[in-house]
Image (cartoon, rainbow, N blue to C red; front, side, top):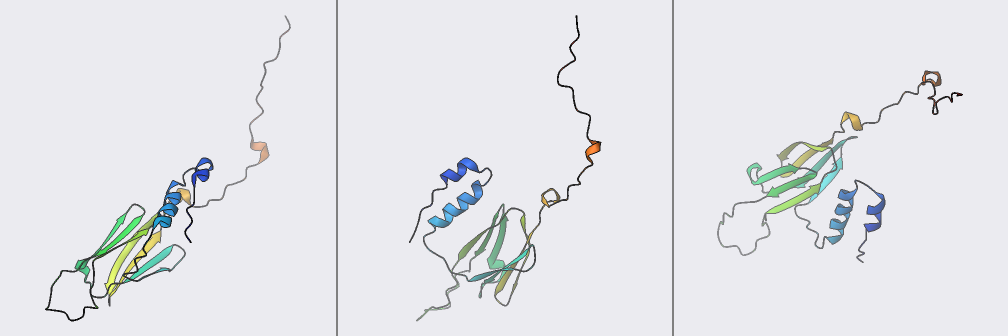
Length: 156
């Protein structure tokens, strides 16, 4: 059952959440689920993540990993070297493009390929001004003297 959600009422009361609403709308429009190549997403630490993709048959020069703002794109393409006439072809190794939406401040730390598994390490790095900080509570005697709102009336 597919339900189209209308986020219009939320736009009236929320500011800066446009990206989230757009992601939800795009996810609801996705019709076909592409399941190749298979992949896992794991949280390996408090702010660390790892994407592992099974890309058997691809070499390092046939894979590209691109980090764009809030988007990670993994492409793979193999040269079409035909070794003859196939009676059955079960290992096709098609070209693919897999996109991952990244949250703000998530950076790609590195990528490695071993035994047919592409491992991409990610880390969320919050800027110092966005980290929680403790606010000191001041003494009430340190406040400034109250201001005079009206001037004193002089008798004529």
